[in-house]
Length: 349
Image (cartoon, rainbow, N blue to C red):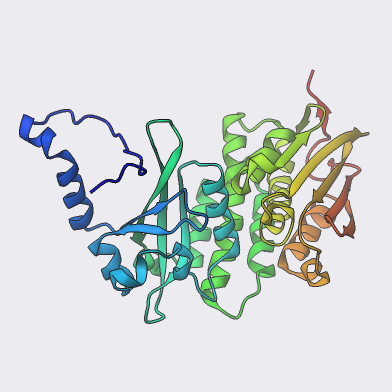
């Protein structure tokens, strides 16, 4: 039964329904939600901790928790030791921006069994247009991922990469070699997230006809995954030659992922500003984080830093200058020339 202070959620009118069906619409919807085979929950967006208010039988069966152990809790209780903080940051950004999202995340059942969850989030709005609830459906894709070995993923990637961007193979090689984890699930997740970053820039190249891509598009495509509202991106219109697009895209992804997990984007009031200017055939890019936690030195020695150095310094021939302050990380990336990768930068006329 609905109370007066709980908003009524309106959906599309069914394309075909009898008068009795329309009268019983709420009851039928509740029955369908409870009995569907897809695990589903609904969380109250007005609660500070986004507590679960509905969970269907399929969700109970999937997770092993009883209804009393689910209702009133935040969905983070499904996270565990090898859950990717980057995936958590993507979920947090989608909720903060009140947008739909589909994210794969490693979750855990009550008995401790890990499973790969293809999570779909969708915002449910009230009559005033405000988000009142979040609907979340889950698909257990553990078996699917189990048969998708790293060799198969690499093979599919090679088939998709155009011959004009062969330099991406060097990046994939770096990802596989430099990823380090004692746990196979964490290793797989780290590789997958970086290949997805390559895929995003791959799509930019495809849309441009494998020609130049604007630097702003490369940066915005990568940082948008982790929260565009906290990020300010500005600079002159600069076109990046095709062979340099994916290395730059991966470098920006590493920085954005680090900011989302450890830096300014991990805090609600944190900000990130990115600007650049052209110098000769190259550019100087500034990365400035503010309002984040005090950086720990160990954050500067992880896989992301190693890969960032490999891409910027070895592949693009540039340099990185880091400064840590109380407000976050400041970076100056200098790329004096991209001719070694395939042509210099240019201003778009």
